[in-house]
Image (cartoon, rainbow, N blue to C red; front, side):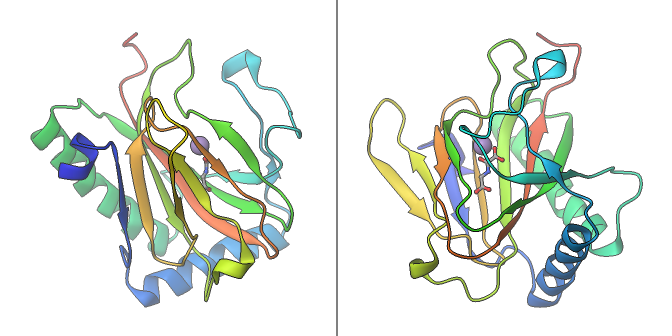
Length: 195
Ligand code: OGA
Ligand code: MN
């Protein structure tokens, strides 16, 4: 709470238990091997575009009504976080949308903000990493830029680490990796009907 209210970002290693991580990682890999991921696109609504020069990852959107037990557990944790953030910081967060993400070796997502210019529903970005035994030599860092500067903080996508940041404040990018990089990326949002 304090870190989100202060610098606007926080890193929480071991956010989930090892058994939960094993289940989520196996589920993501099985969906990937079944061809259930699509090229990620950029933008929102009818402005969605394939922009492989901007991002070259693949995503599998989750449906909150058909979650596996492991995903349902994770959604319950995020629901607790939503309620606590609303109580502590009065953010008015209403719901959560999320996708599983794969970055094949060499893929990336250039520096960006998660909040779109014309729709400002995404308030808090939540990225959970699903990779066993990730070493710095594998690359694939999440690089978060400090607001108004080119100073940055790099985070390795180590299994069980959760990164949360303010979607309209923290520009970030994903550096290319030498191995497949799995994550579960989601956003705590305001109601659709609000501007
Ligand atoms: C995103 C994103 C970061 C990551 O999907 O918008 O920035 O580390 N993901 O996977
Ligand atoms: Mn992002």
